[in-house]
Image (cartoon, rainbow, N blue to C red; front, side, top):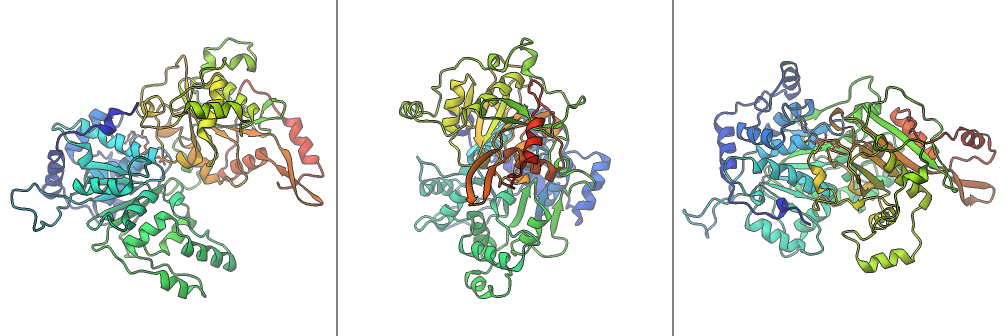
Length: 596
Ligand SMILES: Nc1ncnc2c1ncn2[C@@H]1O[C@H](COP(=O)(O)OP(=O)(O)OP(=O)(O)O)[C@@H](O)[C@H]1O
C-alpha cells in the first residue's frame, strides 16, 4: 500500500512560504561573516532554532511534527546559518546527528525566486516560482525520506500547504518517463527538487524537454563521497594519471551535473592538460548557486581532491567547513552518531556452526539493547529459535518469481541465512535492517528468509509494511513478530529509521571500505541511542587458485578484522554464540595462509 502522504496533493501552499519570505526579508538580521566562530558561541549559550535563523512558523510546525526535536544539534547550529548566508559548505558530521534534517530546515527557510513574467502572463496571473534548491541523493528511499520530513512539517503549519509546491522528487521510474516528470515539475515548480543523479542528469540533458535549473540558488549533494569519485591523496603519479583519465572519460552522473552547473575547471597532472581543456566548460549558471557537499565520511583525501575540481568557491571566507571530528576520538566514534554502538561478527562454517569472530571480547558494560531473548525461554537451542516457515508470499514478489525461486538454488549460503534468522530471533525486539552486497537480489533474500520463518520485507519506505511505518518513531517495545527490512549496500546510505536497533550485514567483500561499513553501522546508534551491528560472515575457505603455486582464500573474518582495525573498534561477543579461537590459531599457523 502506498503511503497517503506522498500521493496526496494538498491545497495551494504559499501562505507558509510567503510568511517565511516575509520573515527573512524583514526580521531576520544578517548573519556575521565568520560562521564558525558565531556558531561555537551559540553552542555555549544554548542555541535555539529561532536564533540560528529558522523562521518561527517553521519551528512551530517542526515542534508539533517532531516533539522530540527541541534544540538544534551542533552540526545544525553551524550548517543552517551558513546555508542562509549562501556560503559553499563541506559538511561532515557523525551519522545520525541531524545533518540531512538540518539541510531540510535550512532549505525550507530559503527565499523563493519568482520567474520573470512572460508575454503570456498578465497582472492577474498568480506568481510563478522557479526551483530554489536541488538536493541530489544516492537512492530513492532517501529521497522519499526527505519528502516524509517535509510533508510532516507542512502538515503542522497553520494554513494548508501543498506538498508538491514545496517539494517534489525526480527519480527513474518504470511507469513515468523522465520527460513526463519534467513536464509536471515545469507546470508547478517546487521550491525543493529532490533527485537521484541519473534521473537529474537525464532530465537536464533531455533533447526535447530539458529541465531548466537556471535560477536555482542552492545545490546539495548528500552522501557526496559516495556520489563523487575522487583521487586518493598520496596516489603515485602514474596511477593518478590513470584515474584522472578515467574520471574524464567516464564521469559519474553527479560529476556531470556539477560540471554542467559550475563548469569544469579541474587541474590535471602534466600530460593530461589537453584532454582536460577539451572537456572543460566555463561556468554556465549565473548567478552561481551555492554548493553544499555532505557526508559522515568526507575525509581529507576527498576534500583535497574536490577542491581541485573548481566547483566550490575559492574565495577566502566563503567556504565553510562544518563538523570536523574531535581530536583524539577513534574513527568510529568520530563518525558514528552513537559511541554506544556494539559491533559483533559471527562466523558461520560450512556445517552450520556459528561462533563469534575470534578477536571478540566479552564486555560487561555494553549498553542495553532491549533483546527479544528476554521473551525467550532459557536453555533453547539455536534451531529451536528459528520459527517455522511463514508464507513466502510477500508484496513485490510475483507468483511467477516465487515459482522460479522455489525451483532454483539460492545464491545465498543457507547456513549464513539460518545464522541471521537465529540471531534475529534471539536479539531483535522490533525492527532490524539486513544489508546485502550491492548486487545481491533483495527479493530472493526475502523469499529465503521467509521460508526460515523471518518476517522479512524488501525495504521500500513508500510502503507501510516495508519500512514506511518505521520512518516514524514508535518506541522500543518488543513486538510479537519483529520485522527484518532487507536492503543493499547501494540503498542504505543516509536512511533514518528511528526504531531500528540492529543492523545485520551479510558477508564482507574484500573490497568493502571502512567508510562503507561506518555508513551501514550508522543506521543505528543515532542520537546516542544504543544499537548493534552484526556482520555475518562465511568461515575462511579456499577458492580457485590465482597462480599454480599459491592457494587463494576467501577470508571474510580477516577482512572484517581489517575493517575493525581501520576504525579502531574491538568487536563484542554476541551472547548465545560460542568462540572460534581454535580455528583462528589453526589458520595463523597454516603455511598456506595467504592474504586472500
Ligand atoms: N535537533 C535535533 N534534535 C533531536 N533529533 C533530531 C534533531 N535533528 C534531527 N533529529 C533526528 O535525528 C535523526 C537523524 O537525522 P539525520 O538523518 O538528519 O542525520 P544525518 O546526520 O544526516 O545521518 P547520516 O549521516 O546517517 O545521513 C532523525 O530521526 C531526525 O528526526
